[in-house]
Amino acid sequence: PPPPPQSEPKPPPYEGSDSAPASGGGGTHTALKRGILVGWALRPPDFRSLRPIRELLCAVQDALPPANGVPSHAYFGRWKPFVPSAFVSGDDRVLKRAMRKMKFFLHPDKLPRDLTSDQSFVCTTLWHVLNDAMDAESPS
Image (cartoon, rainbow, N blue to C red; front, side, top):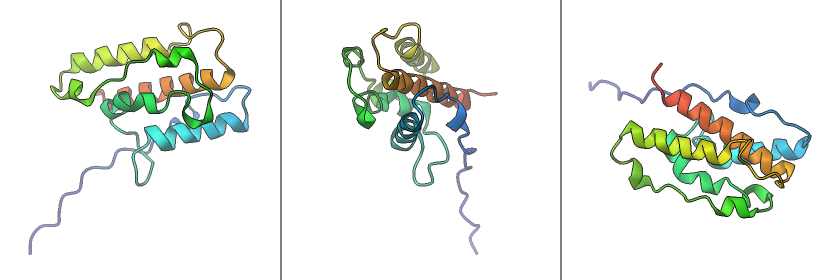
C-alpha cells in the first residue's frame, strides 16, 4: 500500500489573545480584538494559528478603521497597501522594510493625538499581532 500522505506540520496555536491589553474599553475592546483576530489575523478553518506575515501585511488595510465598526480617521487613509507581488522574490530585505513601514505607521508615539480609544486599540492590537507573526516567522 502507498505510504500515508505527509501532512504539513501544524503551527502552534496562537497565544496572542492576551498580547494587547484591554484598557478602558471593556467589552467593546474584546469584540474589536475578536473581530481583528478572526477576520484578519488567524488562519481558517480552525482559527488557532496566525496567517503568514506576508499575507497579514498585504491585508492589513482590511483591519484598519473603518473595519469592525470603528469610525475612520484621516490618518488611516494615508496607508498605502502592499501588493502581494512585492513579496514574490522571497527577499527578506523586502519583508523587513515592509514590516518597518508598518511598525512606524502603527507606533503609539507616531499616532495622531485625536484618535478615539477604539482607534488606538485597533492600532495596538495590529502592532502586537504583526510582531507575533514576525517572531513566528523568524528562525530561532
